[in-house]
Length: 117
Image (cartoon, rainbow, N blue to C red; front, side, top):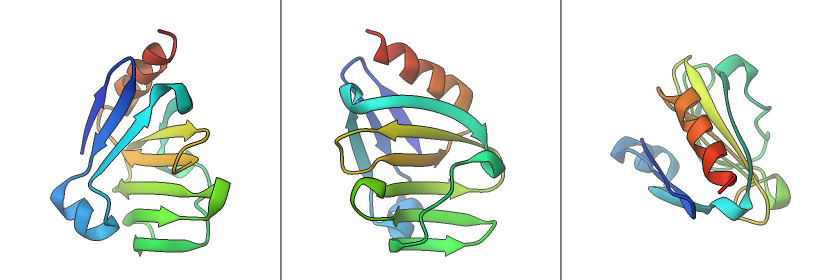
C-alpha cells in the first residue's frame, strides 16, 4: 500500500493482492473532507460494521473491503497485527478508513499537518 499526502488530497494506492481482496485499487480523499487521522494498534481500531458489502474477512488475519452502508460506510485494508492508520472523513464515499501501514504514526502526523494548511 502506498499513501501519498498533499495539501489538497490523500491518495491511497492498494497493492495488487488488495485489489483482488477488496476490489478497490485507488482512493483519493480531499483533505477538506478529512476530520482526523490517527495511528493505533490493530486491537484498538474502531469497531468494524457488521454489514459486509464486498471484500474479504478472515478474523484475526485479514479484513479487506467495504463494510457498512450510508454514513456508516467503511473501507478496511488490514492484515497482520501491527499499527493501523485510522482516517475519519465527512461527506465522502466512506466515513472511516482503517489501513495497515508500517508507517502509521508518520502517515497520521503528515495527514494531520496537511489538514492545517
